Image 1 (tube, rainbow, N blue to C red):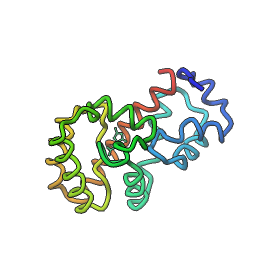
Image 2 (tube, helix red, strand yellow):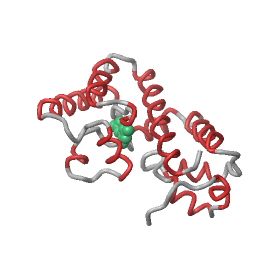
Image 3 (cartoon, rainbow, N blue to C red):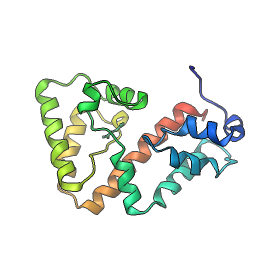
Amino acid sequence: MLMGPMTMTAVNLLEPSEFTRIFGNVVELAPSIASVLARRRPLRDVQHLINELYSIMDGLSDSDKVDILRRHPDLAGTLAEKGLLTAESTAEQKSAGLDQLTEQQKYDLQRLNKSYRDKFGFPFVICARENKAVAILEGLTRRMINTPQRELATGLGEVKKIARLRVLDLVLA
Ligand SMILES: NC(=O)N[C@H]1NC(=O)NC1=O
């Protein structure tokens, strides 16, 4: 069903299971985050909802943060090529122009994604809606030299940006 953005009043009235279904992919493939968020209601407005979401993510253990990063598909990776991304991820990758890469750019991105994953043990995550393909390739090269602790924090920061934009698609500001 195609649904427009909801008012916060409507969000506050959702059954927990409905809330979790609707917000279950605000953090990619992480409905458990949405079900914690459901219990933080009533929420005053969309900014309050986003702040609670950030605080839930900040409160995770390092290993749960790594788990969140690992739920993200590679940008322009195999899942994208096979059309197996979530609806949200498909739209985000398209907005960055990742569906329009040259063969060389796609090869470079996939090779850099692999080096990043081999180094850190989790995928490179960046908010695709805030970056075009060239900036993503540049960011990947630049972030590769960071420490794992730094990249865990940077990756989580990008997950927050992705989640914020996904929330704004669902809730009237
Ligand atoms: N790997 C990665 O950054 N994936 C994500 N980024 C984004 O904006 N949507 C995603 O699925």
